[in-house]
Length: 140
Image (cartoon, rainbow, N blue to C red; front, side, top):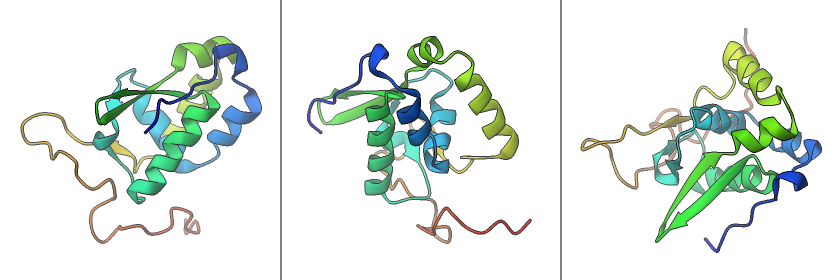
């Protein structure tokens, strides 16, 4: 990854933020990062291919939702909660509340850190869930 570019807080627009948040995987990433922790890309688990996960992270970064930091060959991502709350008060709180209530993005998780964590593991869901489309019909 080249030096990532991030919009200044004053350049973050509501239209770009809402467009970036229009995907359940990206909402799941925001939910995961809402705890304020910076996460390495290798820790992120989602039911999509690594290249697709990378695309989702780029969309969030370009919209100003996240900040990416590179350290050597590793990349880290963090939610820009303070910038978003300043620009759009209550937006993130409302989004996170509804997403949790509706279960949006639940399948996005972080690998456990520590000696048992697998480094550089596959970012997709376990076999059986694979790379199935995340936009499945609602059967409920």
